[in-house]
Image 1 (tube, rainbow, N blue to C red):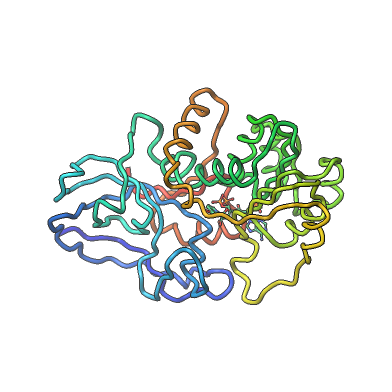
Image 2 (cartoon, rainbow, N blue to C red):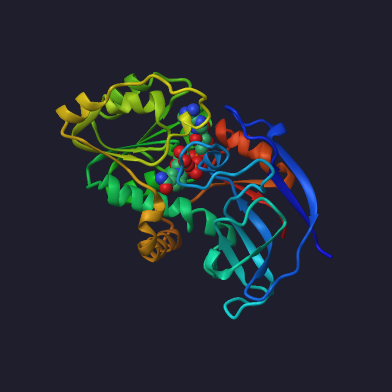
Length: 335
Ligand SMILES: NC(=O)c1ccc[n+]([C@@H]2O[C@H](COP(=O)([O-])OP(=O)(O)OC[C@H]3O[C@@H](n4cnc5c(N)ncnc54)[C@H](OP(=O)(O)O)[C@@H]3O)[C@@H](O)[C@H]2O)c1
């Protein structure tokens, strides 16, 4: 009898999630039935959108109920398959495998990973959802051209670090916004961004004037809130704002008053467009091939922040909401 350790949403978080909103339990795994696959979870992907699952507010991800296992992306190994599509030992990635040691799923909810291509956890990082978000969000929504000034917020995170590097490959002047000197030094010294703004310790407006003297042509917005207000005030003519995420708003219990942006959009003839990575699902193969090529050529590097042990997932998730992660946040569950 297989015992499964699982992390539940015990109570629906109000505002910033707390450790007491989560509960770790052990339960017995049911038998694997015809048409199902039993997966041993190896890596969890912790992503900001999961805060939306914990809320009842309208979101693109289905809401969890109190007592549910936390749903999220993961990479695992097939240890029992009652299907034709998968065999024991296959490495797979699934968007709904969840915070647990084992999951039983149907083939439609997973995809096979080639472990020879790259470390398997990249299937939920640079060669997975965050990578595709950066690739298609920047190129299809931001539409940068060489010489453009591209600003990206949450710039050292899973998506942001890739957005800036793709923009550099495309010949753009790249300015990252991140919290703290260590993250900003990483952006300029290691990732070769042209400039970085430490929004926690520097005046964002002054720094934007300094680093974007001709205005901002593309803003890849991961955060919303006051950082976005500042960037909107610096848009250049025909600027494109790609609205990817608003993490500064995810834990608010009441809407935050903000800038009225229509005047800036009007006078600059600018465009704001929200997007969800899934809208590009039919084209993922193109993005994955290109990202894998750039990694092989050394044009893209990626930083991971690895936390060991399933039981550490709640604390790590709370850290993600507070900027404690430095790079793509992963939980290593098992070897
Ligand atoms: N549209 C889509 O399909 C899609 C897909 C994937 C992700 N996203 C969104 O993209 C954004 C980035 O996701 P990610 O996975 O790459 O996460 P991440 O950047 O790896 O981690 C989140 C980062 O957000 C920053 N942050 C947290 N609270 C903040 C606040 N109040 N103000 C400013 N920055 C704050 C922190 O960095 P600092 O230390 O720099 O503050 C933190 O490290 C999120 O908003 C996410 O929801 C959207």
